[in-house]
Image 1 (tube, rainbow, N blue to C red):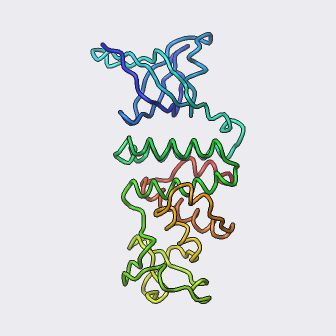
Image 2: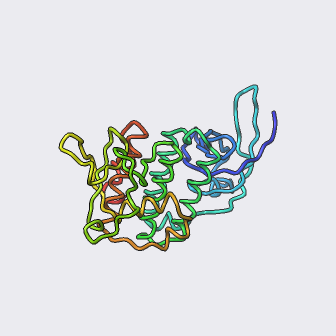
Image 3: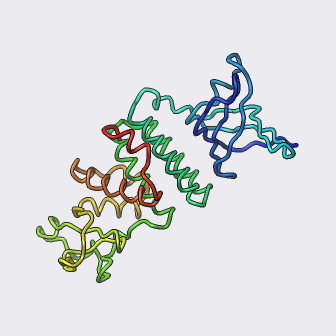
Length: 258
């Protein structure tokens, strides 16, 4: 029996019996785990231990009975805008489902940094900014999983997709993405034998490379068109669902929102 504390993000809260709650928790130390919140409607912890609240959670562990009880929660961030904005609420659920399906990408500490950075960022952003922020989050999470496509070089010939091609024609080029090769193919290497699963403009490819290479602050200052955003979104959604190995409920249920 022991008392412990850890940084925590509340993912889900479910009924367990008449007055208790079963809480799904994410922490940088332990990844995803479960704990029980005891107490009826008058318990102050009921309002504190809510989805997407983060802070320091205090636990009592009975290793003999294999039980974990929440004794206190010092909330640092409430993410109140999630309750007022439908997109932000669904985006948070999307990130949570990815986190669970991928088992924190095998690195809880790094997942903690990326997921909380995303949630904190959209809390302070407009809905339009949050939509682009979601694409950046997915691209960085793909990198954490070790399966982010290389946006710098052609997967076929290895030449740079960015350097030395700044003519007007080059600016209008499109780059094919092959799922089979998990990479982008330059226009010079495109052939009828190579299937293109997605086609991205130079602007979209450049933006994704910026997400990889530049600081988050610098990337946020880049302005892109709606068409460029939609291209990146379609690719990022497809790749993250492929990485999870299953259809994602948040995407299916949130169609038209996400």
